[in-house]
Image (tube, rainbow, N blue to C red; front, side):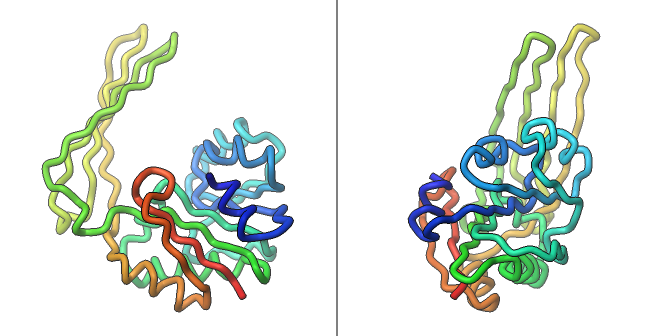
Length: 208
């Protein structure tokens, strides 16, 4: 879907920047179609990304204020990573920073975090990932928005036993209008695909 969105809107698109690329789950596939670059704030994740997409230029930086000195046909920010900006001001700064890395006619794709009205307090969710060496189960129960965080519990089992890890990432919940306005303030023409990649929608901004 990502490749189709880009190809339909940017003729001959070749270069792509993946912002908050994490462990390179998207880059692994996108490098087959585009000349890719990645950036993330977590150096440990970048190390994994370098194994998944060997030879891809990867940079350490904050999505709100990086400057790579390059421009791209497409810039992506997926996995709802924009929610880690926490505030509307920082979210707008991140959108502006990403827009500044677009070529004329290039597009910015942002997969948003949940809107406040879509957040269901007390919602339960779990996922399990298993290999020959280990099993990881992640469980989540959503807290009230005013606490500004998620609580994720991981159970990790391997030959040495079972361990437990708790993660409490802090997120920002932005309204649809706030998301749209951030693109407009960055000087982009914006459209919204309601379903998007995972049901959370996706915003597409084009640079004139």
